[in-house]
Image (cartoon, rainbow, N blue to C red; front, top):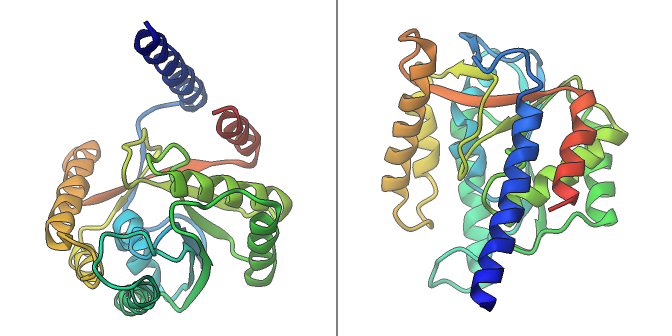
Length: 259
């Protein structure tokens, strides 16, 4: 009986989350994504990556295209990556992952890496974290920010979304886009990365500390190839993004805080 009750409670919670997500997405004028042969608007770019590798997996192709256009890119890595599946000592794996992030950033053309070193899998939207990210936004003054999808199925990814949106409310940014990794989302923008796919895969494969990274790279290629279906044959590979406006941020935060 207790198990049945817990299953029903979990199902009800999941249904509420899905319903809120549906209400939010349904507010868009169309569920057909805008095709972006070039890039989302913005020349000062910041990507928030929960872990070292999420930046490459989620929107490495788009980032490389920004680099080719001469745009300034900062990558802010939220956690220390210490909980990855590795035989190395924690201090060693943290340094290994940072070095991999620097090398992947060179591949993608990211100009600056910032490591906040919050504990892996224990990232929380604390006042300290929100203040720190707000300060970084104030100093870098980006006009375009990329965030992990706010319902992405990893606690650090969701926490990153909350922290960053709370900071963006204080220091607004012209363009805010979510990218996907673990959880498929309903996108409203689709970026053509056909000419950047090789660089994206190269950056992903830099992360040799991650078990099965070659398989992960191929599965990411498959996801981006699948996403191209929405282009009606115009793109060979695409990254799916969800653009939000300032009016949406409060609604998203209300959904996240209600979980």
